[in-house]
Amino acid sequence: MSKLEALLSRLKAHQHVLIVAAADHDTMPADSVLKRVAELENAIAAVEAVMAEEGER
Image (cartoon, rainbow, N blue to C red; front, top):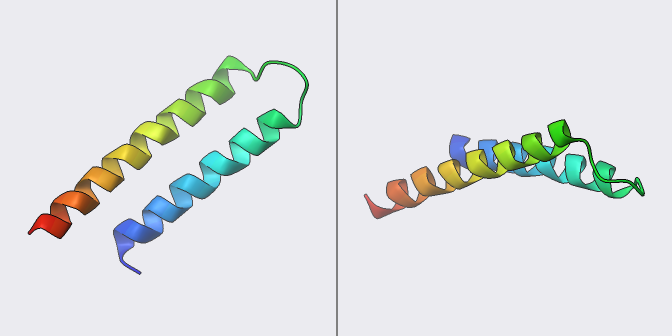
């Protein structure tokens, strides 16, 4: 597994944990949790883009 793949896996796992934890509550997640999930989504997209670029070379 490449370093990028390992990073992508860690980012997705952390995002998954946050989403599942938020789903366990009957209330709306805190804004800070939503912000963190969104930030992780951006990071995931960035890593995937770099991986795609690396694959094209």
